[in-house]
Image (tube, rainbow, N blue to C red; front, side, top):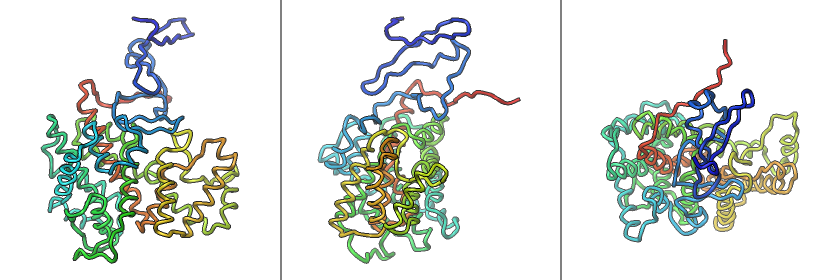
Length: 422
């Protein structure tokens, strides 16, 4: 063993030392290979929340929380959202390269034709009560897809991987749109294969059953939502991705794994945060009440917590928030937006970015702060904020699932514990 590439633990109770290999990645912190820690020391490592534990090797996404970087397959997120469509990002994640012009066109066409749901799945929505939250319906419907495509329980060949992945990516917007329409009691609108992925989703949300729209879908609206999808596409080993991979490690159907990820994403501490941001901004009421609200946030004896600021990984500005801030400012100009919510959000942002209380705690606006206000500006109901997160993130979940499935060293996920009972 090369001692230069090892990390030594010393048990000061008996003076015994144990060496473990250090593994270096292409970017980011090195890791200690602690897979043999228990067999060597008869002890476990205690790491609540896995804040210091790498549970896999991956070449999909890299995050540098200190620098505020997010990179997919070697491409910075700013480059991707400014120069490529969401479907190009999907292709990149699934194929490890950006598509050529012909590949992009062919991929787009395939996604359009796969967007229809199995006829039997439509009847599942009728079993849910009126007013059911779209996230519960969405999670259940995705799990039900495993019944329609059960043969994909054992995905082995690259063609099977791609078919399984492209099917779920294409159908998620349709399921989400159906879930919304059921929640408000209006008839479903089927996909229109003449429309691009993101425009088609807006069409399925807004159109009447005869396919008519109250007003044409604007290009700026499609670009805005496409950007939001791209910014949500993948985010390394977050809570919902880890859930997908944990369920997947048991050998469960990939669509069941995705359904579990959707349920995890619904939590307010994860994907449900953007819905909470709008609820909080609405509760403030008006711009002249922002100062009073900020005082409550800073009061250690008050339970009020500022939503949409700070991040578990990013300790500087969230790079996704940087892109969304540009987009929000563009929308305000092009759509002439000056809503009460926007004014309140602007005031909260102004104070937080210049107040030492927030700056010293690295509480910068995150993606949820801006996505909520942008989606509100696009007239998308708040109950659809997290389903939109699901639409964007599905490709990241399935790509991470595929990477784990391909790894011959994959084991069933099974953490250990520190027992403190009788």
